[in-house]
Length: 117
Image (cartoon, rainbow, N blue to C red; front, side):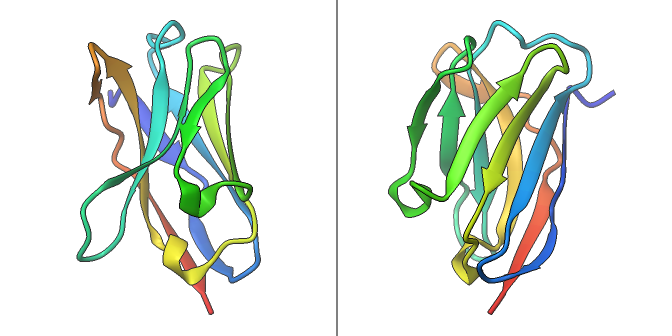
């Protein structure tokens, strides 16, 4: 069983919203910092937003600041990424990961987000 599984992606018009979910399938990572990443076609994977083990957002990239909100519900073993005011440049495969020892591990398979103009 894959440790992390993302869902919630889809096709949306510019200005729309989506909420991504990252399920910790084995309820293993409740005490770890986690993060969302994205990879657009022809570009390297980039960090989007991070959250501490206690639920405090740790950082977010400037291009999504004020539009995306990261959160987690450990009772549901799920981390979320609320994405509002989506832009075509947000189109990418979004995946989640766990931070351990300063590096990210246990990448999920990802969920596709496509924003049409």
